[in-house]
Length: 363
Picture 1 (spheres, helix red, strand yellow):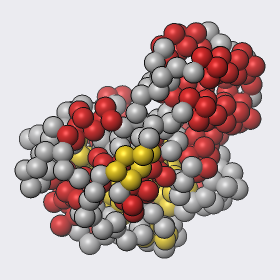
Picture 2 (cartoon, helix red, strand yellow):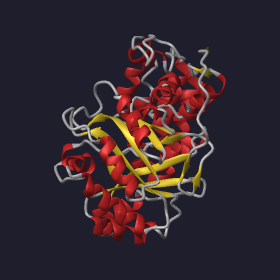
Picture 3 (cartoon, helix red, strand yellow):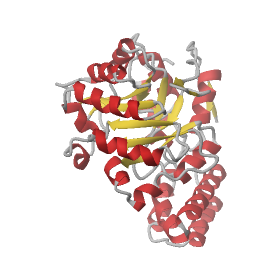
């Protein structure tokens, strides 16, 4: 079903990050345990242009962790791709560049946004937001001086509501030579709950002269349009909105340019995407490893499918590719009702929420 919502918004210019020129202002986010090569490959088949690796521990990479090196895998079609590094030690970050520079990465991102306690307790990820912004300036500056690649940083609005430091951190990153900054519109204490603070992202955009990429609640074309309108950002990073939805990029770009998008996928389309994703996982991780890994992705694909729950419960005991394919085929043959992809998100987060002009549900 195509949905049409008239809007007067003019899509932003193609996004440029340092020397990297993109044709669209959308980016597939780095997500731990998610953004591997199979996931990125599937999204590229449906319109994604720039994607990131999973979050990479600089310390693990510098010490030659085999598992971490595997997370850096790139294919010939997986371009352009950025690598996101987690760390708070400038020397350790620089040591990773000897490895990164041997691979065809297009840019480097520094993670100052991860809210997970085991990360922040080490002063990494969003833990950096509790430090003097000058420390982030030094951290970014060291990496900028040691690489020929554009360097970006992903942050949050602050540690909590009493320490909204995004503007100060953005200034520091820009002074250090960052090519762009991505702002997730929540504090670390919010993690992924509560409302996104688009006003804080807009304030960063008004403050710096480098591209600002907005992150948070990018679940639907209309929500992403609202983000562009209310923040003035140069791009939007799609994270959880891409889970179980490889069509996210093509839908958003269609809406930004035409005012229309498809809000419903057939069970055949969903099952076809599942088959493709499963095959990519098994090619990359081997049959058993790929099948076991795919089980969590199955749950996201099945989220909007009536009767999907009974299939989700079954797949968590499946370890063979053929058996997983059989479950997917059975689901397709059952032809259950499929709910609209974006309608629930729009009703919860958009239609009841006034825009910057006080109008509820206007797009």
